[in-house]
Image 1 (tube, one colour):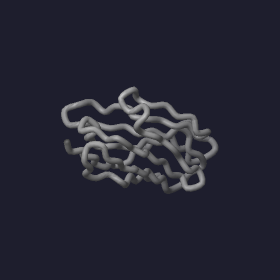
Image 2 (cartoon, helix red, strand yellow):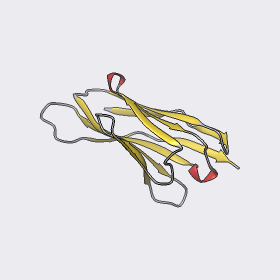
Image 3 (cartoon, helix red, strand yellow):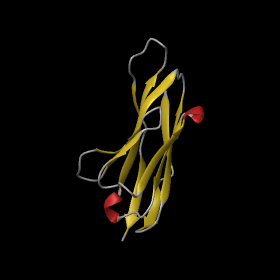
Amino acid sequence: VHLVESGGGLVQAGGSLRLSCAASGTIFRINDMRWYRQAPGKQRELVAAITSGGFANYADSVKGRFTISRDNAKNTMYLQMLSLKPEDTAVYYCYADVLTTRWDTRGDYWGQGTQVTVSS
């Protein structure tokens, strides 16, 4: 199973970006999917998460600005980021709990990360 993020880049404060995370490989089912981020010198933090049924939750710092979504048919997750702030600058990682067979109970997979830089 591979997770590939895309959509990062450089944007001015107040701008927007849309990140994508596509899962490929032997996939029976994808449970939770999440976006994490890690800024220089800081610990990785959870930004947003979404269940297979579409229930979402967010870190307080991004509520009202970021929207997580997923297309189960395409095994893809998205993060729409609006009103970006310099403090949103980080490497964004996607995570997915992927079952490769019906007998799996859990499978932790990570993407390679995509850089988001917000200039002031």
